[in-house]
Amino acid sequence: MARVPFPDWSRLIGIPVQIRQYGTAIRSGVVDDAMPDSSMLWLMADSSQGRTLYSAYEGHEAWIEPELL
Figure (tube, rainbow, N blue to C red):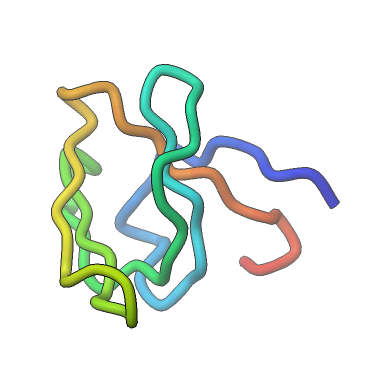
């Protein structure tokens, strides 16, 4: 199934997402935590990168496969 943008980041904790910035995929991973107002989220560290913060203000979007919710 195709990925879709999901604006309520607070519901994505523990869910695999793809982070896009201005339409370009920049990282995939599992959401570790998110602000209640969906302004920022953190992806868990993995073998290639550490725990990383992404901000809606900087144009980041979280894309999911809908059946994962």
